[in-house]
Length: 70
Image (tube, rainbow, N blue to C red):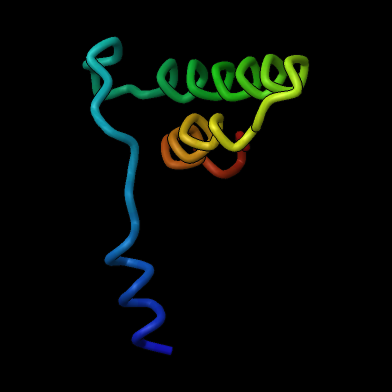
């Protein structure tokens, strides 16, 4: 059990720095990545492409946004 938690902590990655949002308040960064994920997902579905390329946006907004918002 403890080893499982240690591996999760070791592999945990948070959102990288985005120069468009340099301030401490990351609300807009959260919102922008949320929109980008859904736009990417919609575009890839319409093209019949692989939606997994949009997972980066999902990971970032899940990392930045409060749980109650997601």
